Every structure is written in structure tokens, then in C-alpha cells.
Image (cartoon, rainbow, N blue to C red; front, side):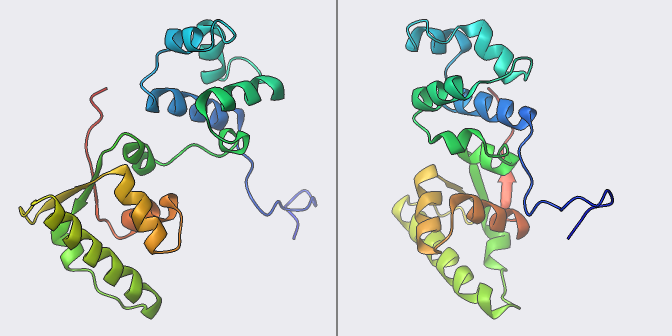
Length: 178
């Protein structure tokens, strides 16, 4: 397959420098660190002003520095090179996954492949509500660990679970107050 210029069309989209910058900022903020905190934690190896310029995509990131940052954040280097997370995933990383139980109770399967996922999901939600004695029946907060468990139960990734929840319009996004 080729594009209009006759060049082969890539099979996937590469992240932009802005995507990588956004990922760096997301990783730092997910840990609750300021730019100054990173400088202190890295014992001055990563200056706050330099990290800020990486996060704004004002400065090029070398492979060596990317490896240092990946080590600092305890993530694989490949994670830095991924496109930024969707808003739903950002909310999940901040612990704000809110499920609309009213919509979840009305899930129906027109696709047999979805039937098992819906069964697992609704059973899991009932179990969480029982464990937390949360019986309001309208909204349920999922924790990051709940998302990981759902991914494990459905043989998918956390991102895939979040995408499915978003596609089914089950997410209630809580405003960011940070």
C-alpha cells in the first residue's frame, strides 16, 4: 500500500516529539513530582529547567537521556516512546475511574464475542460493590488495581479495558482538581 506520494504507507503511526513530551509530563505528574522534585531525586543529574523543556518539546531528547528518565520513572524505555494516553487513561492513572452503573446494568450483547466480556464485567462490578459495601447503585469508583484485575480477567491490557469502557459510554470523567 502506498500514500499519495508513492511512498509505502506505514502500518502504524509513530509518536511525535509532542507525544513523547506529553508522556514525560504524564509520568512525572502521576508520581506527584514537581520539576524541582525530579532534580532533587536525580541528585541534580536531571535539571528542572531541562526536564521542563523536554516536557514542552522545546528541546531534543537524546537516547541516553531518555534511558535515564525511563530508569528514574521505573518504566521501560518503550513506554516513553508510546503516544500519550487518552483522557480516560489519564484519569485512570490518577485513580478517577467512575463507572455509570445505570448504563452498565443495561449493557446488552448484540455481538456474541462481547457476551463473555459483559458477563465478566458485570460480575466484577457486583463483587466490588459487595466488597466495599457500596450499594448506591448509580456510580462506582474503580481503583487502578481494579482496572488491572479487569484486564487480567478479560485477557487484554488496561488500555483496552479503558477503551472498551469508553466505547460503551460507561465512564464518568471526574474533573481534575490538581
